[in-house]
Length: 303
Image 1 (cartoon, helix red, strand yellow):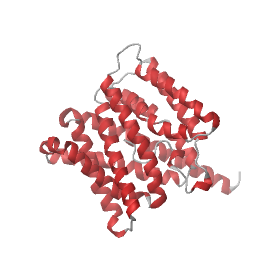
Image 2 (tube, one colour):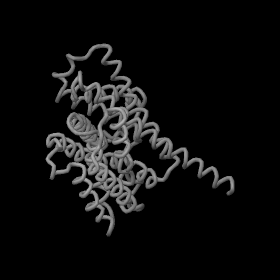
Image 3 (tube, one colour):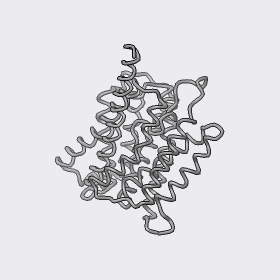
Image 4 (cartoon, one colour):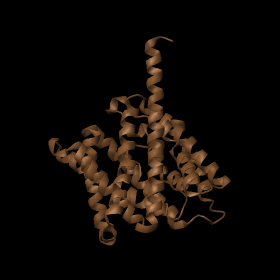
């Protein structure tokens, strides 16, 4: 193997490790959020994460130094609303259904985008994903909490919008610059919806914990994903990110004592297979512009 090939291989290996570390941070952040929700409520934790993420990203990106068109500002504002809906809905979902199940159900959003934008046989992966959903929810048992499932699916719809809007924002402005606008909008939206109920519960220890959660999700994984994407193709990165529901299941088992049923395990496996298949067939036409987020069904700032 020549030195160029060796460097490429090492770079890809490092990128893969960064992608796995990013997914681990996301799921650990969610597990920690669930623990705090017992005292603060799911809405309070969601609001706290969004508020700190907005402060951190604005401090890093300093959006007042960047130039945005009116159309770009509109896209970023819509992206912020989608982010708020995704975060609030997912936190409500994991109150009553396991983390792995909620992550896999929410993954239906970007997976649907990849399937719809896929070519030919790529759309058959929808049937595999549907079979996975049946395994995750086990409707024949009637044991899955309907409200939790519905909140996860609302999160999935918001995540699908997030994918499409992130693609548009990424075409128009640097990704961090877009987040520096969208994240404050998300925090403001969450404040309007749940702020009056949760702000009064905040104290210094809770705010300090919120800062840690904001770093764990999204600041650190976002940074790792940016570094990983410099070393991996978008398709390879997207395929790796399809493993996130499985990582969520493992984190739920180890840290939350959520033991999945055999049907749920089979469902998560089917969702992962559908994600890998759809990612491989859902690439954006190179003539359409810059690389699409749909190459990566789990864009930055999932949840």
